[in-house]
Image 1 (cartoon, one colour):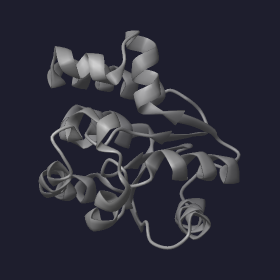
Image 2: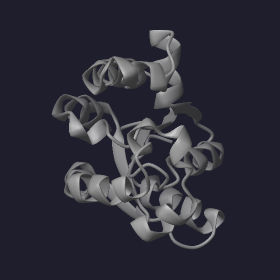
Image 3: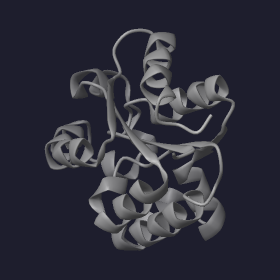
Length: 168
């Protein structure tokens, strides 16, 4: 049995927010992959993207390798973690992959594009990313939970789905 949960999904779908609450409910540690990337690279996400998306993705893979070694953890990934097949292979080995599926129309209503390098061109980019990644999220997921309703309801659904699969 696995003792780590990796949350995947679109930017703005709620991975970090839900991950913090879920980790508390499970009595697990919480890790935000973007924060971890910044820690190990000593650069901001924006700085890494300025060097090139491929530079960022290399650090993302390094983060996957390190975070997959943690114990009893909920990990909020970046939205593009599914773009690199090696990342999914690393995570599938030791983690339960939970896709937080939030309707893109809801994300567009409240996402702050100025803080997300891939969305700097505007919210239309979310629709492009959605078209590019939705099948990848579904294909990688062990569990899919719709992010509709209150945060508490979504966290409880995530916990219910995970209870039979986690080493608790």
